[in-house]
Image (cartoon, helix red, strand yellow):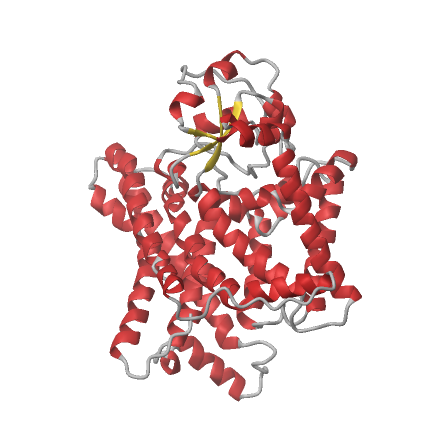
Length: 479
């Protein structure tokens, strides 16, 4: 619930003295942010690229590779989402074409309240698992099989999103139903951008322009006191309406080291599910399966057994790959649920309190782990083809070379990121268990081991992969 209510709090130093990088105070950038020109320009560009990608797929001959596949599966997802989110924060949502059109539709629509039973994290989380991850695992290449297939996939999502914006108020699609909305909002806490307000000005404010300007019905003046921006998309509408609201640059993951209030009661599941499918599951599929261990992996053996009996064609639905997803997700949920229960018992708090507090530390793990594959694929396969296709759109023949080749040194360094994210996560757990340990009077190390269990599961899979690559002959690794 996000009712706009005045709050009283102790005076805090002005934003300009607390934070060095107040972007809204920069001469040119600040003016562009305050006027809304920068964000509007980026949104128009995003909408234009999205529209061109979808439209060209229907007006040109269906092809294996084209603007639709290159823009949707090369730029929008996963490049922008996996690179922008852990660096800048939830900035992708700020320029999302759906949200851009959605604000216009929401103001002119029916403005009905979104059903209470569907509010929160679950609807969008279920959609992204079923409509994307299951298909991506078990039917590899199905969504990106051709330009027209890609266009239909995103067009269907767009129609559903626009209908939701028109019928319901407060940007309900972004807050409750978008497959990426809640995932990027939670994992965006890793990034450096945040909305802060002038405490002294807010203390005497009676008009709450920042809250009135927010299409998502949030209260920006409460973000700092709660250390929680909730479903904020960094759209900066509050900044254009109130001079006491600022867009600032903080150290990476600053919010993850402090207590958070006002969390969604089920937020811990977002971190666990994404770690399960995009972390542990991905390492099962693209890690262990690219080692000499592949013939011995249980999900591979089970899949071969099912397909050998003709029950299902592996080209239609690969049972082995699906089981890798199910096992990765199931193990992560099982370990997380058990470990947080043990931590809650040791600390004398409820399971939800312990789980929500500790799961925040998982934010860097899965989202940063996606960067190497996203950047490598874009640099070696998509960037130059995209440039050539855009040239062809305007009747210009271009022949750009690839930005990089597999084996280039700088691409190799990207593979360090998942390990760096793991270390960061383990350190964040250590920071976050401090308060629980002090309250419970129990050992901090004990709580750290429980809180780190999901991350240690991920680490265990990485160790097995590395051991197989080093110790077993014939090792071949392509991701």
